[in-house]
Length: 127
Image (tube, rainbow, N blue to C red; front, side, top):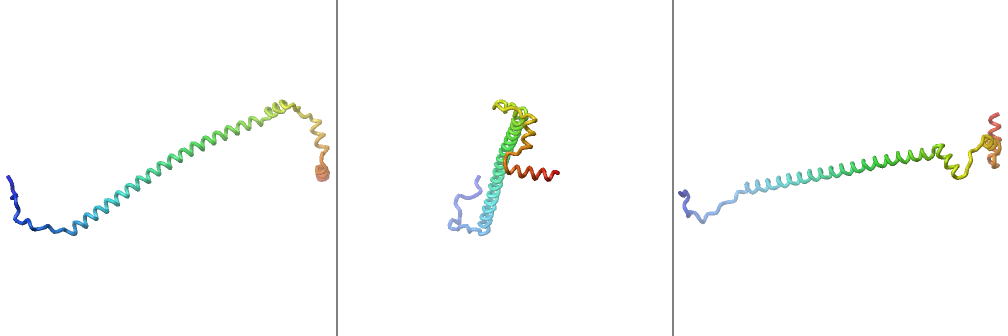
């Protein structure tokens, strides 16, 4: 059952364009574009934030590794500069421990002329 006739009685008539409809469509298109650009910018900012998070975490791990290495090197330095290690290294080079008599003789006899003046000034100040 057909409600509309096959042929219309007004084939020469044209439909008028509604200017308000065109404006609504343009407004809708512009608002959709603005919304899409906003979403793209938000996603971009989120991606940048995640990248900065990864970089920060990598730098934090590198800092921890460097601090561990610094602690290890400080420990090695303290071990190497301990009196027992220094004495063993000196004996390995053929040095001998200083005797008390050598230490006292070195203090009472300055070796350079500059030290002679300093020694006499120091002895005057002590008196």
